[in-house]
Each structure stands twice: as structure tokens, then as C-alpha cells.
Image (cartoon, rainbow, N blue to C red; front, top):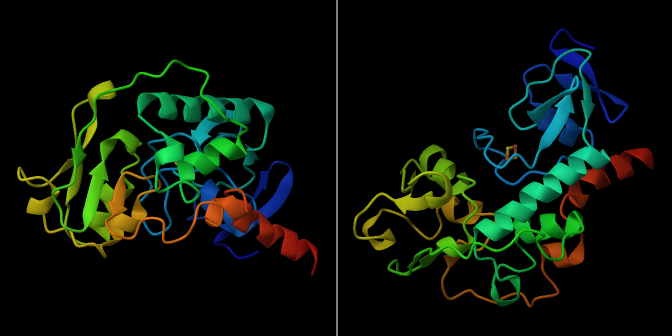
Length: 241
Ligand code: FES
């Protein structure tokens, strides 16, 4: 083990990790999936959704922002944490208007896939049915805020990867909404259909126009395998070596 590495334990498994990485990254490198929605590889961590909540040395922490420490003991796959994550996912659903059966992102949607992974078929809280605006002004990209989960992946991707700053937020709490950098709507911004910000969206909020249903429902990414199984297959393959 080099001086840049630490040893930690995730769900009882001993792993080595670079001391500069987060718990989520260390877990992923070792084939352990920690659920996440607002985290996306290549973007600065934001810590918004709390779906990645773990217990690090007994204290609840978001795994996407918590750095590893030598000797750290992390609980990830426990009944308590699965229950907290289920509650968070339930709340995300009722705070928006997510009608999966009519959504083009179905089967490719990380929120839908996260719900299935956690055994959720219907939220247990009452729907709030908030009023949220659609912006279809851009020739190539649609914003449907009914499906936005305020993860800020498009905000960060536009700023950090596209160098534009097209997206931001307006309002607070239950009135918080995705905003764009022009009073003319999305059409007034410098957004391009190929921007990283568009593909960073984990749900059906930012959608490319004229490409709907190119892949039939039932043959899409999470129709084939549960979310996170690509990461867990790394561990399975290592075990088979
Ligand atoms: Fe860590 Fe969202 S993935 S808070």
C-alpha cells in the first residue's frame, strides 16, 4: 500500500483507496454500488439528492461528498439505509409529476430505475401535483420541469463541461425550479443539442426533439438490467478470476 492509499471497510469488505477519493468513488472502484442520482462522473459533487446516504464511522453522510479516511467503517447496504433511500425516492416522485408510462425516458430513466431497485412501484406519500412549466422554445431541446428532480447535473455540466452556464435555479424549497440564462426561454440561450448538459439529465426533463422512441420500450438500458449492476458486475468478474 502506498502513502497515497488508505484502507477502509464498506459493508465489512476491506478495500484500499486513494486518499483523495470519496466513499462513493472508492466503493465503485471495488464493485460496490452506492445508489446516487445527483452525482455524475466528471462533475463536481453537489450533495443534493441524499440518495447516496451511508453511515461513515456511525454518522450519516452523503457518500458522494465524504472523503475516505484510513480505518473508516462504512455501512451502505443495510435495512436502515435502504429504508431512508426509499423514503427519499418516494418524496422525489410526489414533489414532481412523474408519469412513467407516458414518458419517453422510461427504461432509460435513473429515477425510475432507482425506484425499481428499491422495490417501489407506487409512492407511499400523497402526490402534490405542483404546477411546473414546459419550455419547448428551443428548436432541438425540450424542458419538461414536471420531471425535473433538481439534481443540478445540467447546471454543473453546462458550466463545467460546456463552459456556458445555461442552467441555474430559481425559487426556494417547494417552489424551486430549473431556470435558464435568458428571459426568452431556452431558445434565447447558447444551448446546443450536443451539449453535455443535455445528456447529463438523469430523467426526462431535458429531452432531445425528434429522436423519441428510437429504441422501443422494453429494450432500453434499465429494462435489461437493474441500475448499478454494471458496477456490481466488476466485483462479480473479479471474484471469478
Ligand atoms: Fe450523493 Fe446525490 S448522489 S447526494
